[in-house]
Image 1 (cartoon, rainbow, N blue to C red):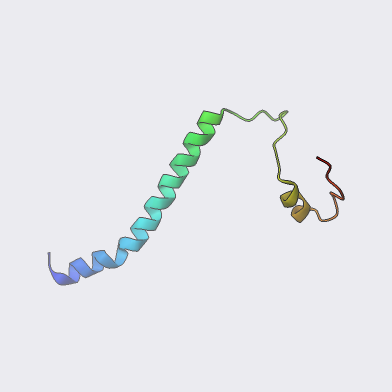
Image 2: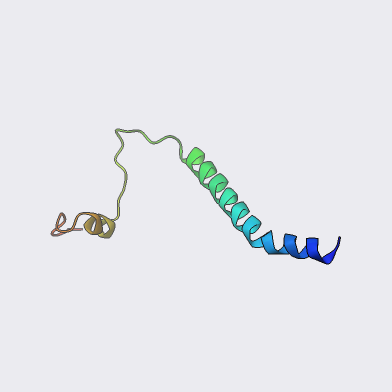
Length: 65
């Protein structure tokens, strides 16, 4: 392999690495969702109180534990 081709391939390596990282992350997320089972539409999902307050300010005035 000549130096020009080697450098051209080496220049694209970070792009390949980023693409493969995204593919692996998607596969892991798919496996985790398969292990957790399907989410029922009637089943409430847990949401962090701070996150909900950021989404809708003033919605939660006081949280008692």
